[in-house]
Structures are given as C-alpha cells and as structure tokens.
Amino acid sequence: MRAKPRKSPTFHLERFRKAKLFVISAPSGSGKTTLCNKLLKDDLALARSVSMTTRPPRPGEKDGTDYHFVSEKYFKDTIKKNGFLEYEENFGYLYGTPKAFIEKSLGKGRDVLLSIDVKGAMKVRGEYPDESVFIFIIPPSVKTLKKRLQSRRSEDGEAISTRLKLAKKEMAYKKRYDYTVINDRLGAAYKKLKAIIVSELNLRRERRCKSST
Ligand code: ADP
Ligand code: 5GP
Image (tube, rainbow, N blue to C red; front, side, top):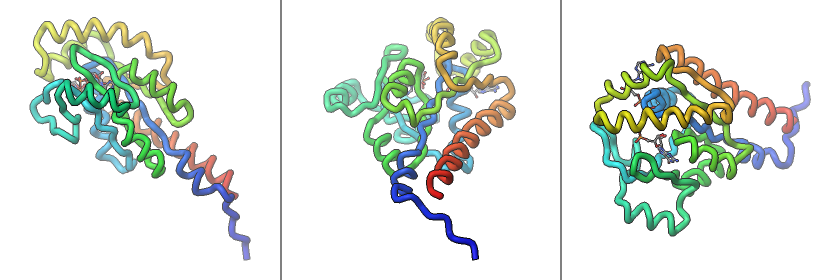
C-alpha cells in the first residue's frame, strides 16, 4: 500500500496565505469591465472586490454589484476610518478599494479580482507584493478606444477627450504589469486573460503540493 502523503504542519496556513489578488487595469473604454464580468461568471471562483465610488451609476449598473455608490461625505468618512486599501480620484470622482473585504477574502483563502486604475494598482503592489498578479488590458489602437467610448454612450464628447488624454499617460504603466492582454476580438482576449489566471492558480497549487508532501 502506498503511504499517504504527509501534510506539513503549516498546510492550512499555507493554503490561506496563497490566495491571490488579480489586479486588472486598463485605459477607460478598453473593455476591462466587459472582460472582468466574463471572468466573474466563469468557473474560476473569483471574488469581486466591489469598489466604492462617488460617481453616479451608469444605466444598468447596480449598487453593491458594480460599485458601492456613495456620497462624498460617506467616502471621506471611510478614508478617516482607514477603510480603504487604496483610493484615487479619477475624472473628478473618488474611487476606493474597501480594505476589510480584501483582508477577509485573503484570510479565507479566496482569490480576488480587482479592477482599478494604475495608481491604485501600484499601491496594492506595495501592500501585497507576493499575493498580487498585475494584468494590463490595452485596446488595439487609440482609434478603437475612442469608438468604444463613444459606443458605450455613458460620457459626452468632453469626457471622452479627457479619458483619451489620460489613456496615453496610463499606457506608460504597462511595463510595470506582469501581463498585457490586447483586447481586439473579445473572445480571443478573454481566452488569453483566462489562461493567465488559470496558470497563476495552477502555479500556486503546484507549490502548495510540493510543500505539503
Ligand atoms: P472599461 O471598463 O475598460 O472602461 P468597457 O468594458 O465598459 O470598458 O467597454 C467599453 C465599450 O467597449 C463597451 O461598450 C463594451 O461593450 C465595448 N467592448 C469591450 N470589449 C470589446 C471588444 N473586444 N470589441 C468591441 N467592443 C468591445
Ligand atoms: P469608471 O468610472 O469608468 O467605472 O472607472 C474610472 C476609473 O476608475 C477606471 O480606471 C477604474 O479602473 C478606476 N477604478 C475603479 N474602482 C477603483 C478603485 O477602487 N480604486 C482605484 N484606484 N481606481 C478605481
């Protein structure tokens, strides 16, 4: 009879410690939300980090699912209470990652998906350098980006030009990310994104198996 592999005494702790934060950033309009929604519906069991924001909801967005839509006063009170892992201002609105959810998820060994801007992502890197995987989504061209922003119909012309100007600055952060995915055809981009996440999760499993035998 084959001996049962022995688990190391810290097996359970290792399991909890090895949960990952998948941090996804992209210039606005690149398709990050579309791709993240697909990931969350897939069989990866990722928990979504629902950000808090002072921006008003877009048509179809649900409070508590897409964002926690809050007043500026509530957001600022949460800053005072040290309730954010990170927060930033974008396009005149505040956006932040609630800290308690991240800590609770990691504590339970649950992998989390964060869809946040480049500056916020760099702060997460500072806090969780070992747990985080950074993925940058880029549009095939600036022309396509403009078209996508127009097709979404959630911003006026001025807001679209502001987002396009910022997009150029954000692209400079690309090299600080672990992976880049070009969102040209949605199906192909999704396949690549999912493959990255699956391989990162498998790497962790392999390491866990090695340390538990
Ligand atoms: P972001 O979250 O990066 O701001 P969205 O996911 O809201 O971007 O996508 C912007 C617009 O582009 C939406 O109307 C979305 O349906 C569309 N879109 C996303 N990915 C693609 C793609 N690969 N091809 C064509 N349109 C896309
Ligand atoms: P949108 O208004 O298009 O949903 O988001 C605008 C920008 O804010 C996007 O780049 C988005 O990734 C970013 N964002 C959303 N939530 C957060 C957050 O919690 N923290 C940070 N830093 N950025 C966020």
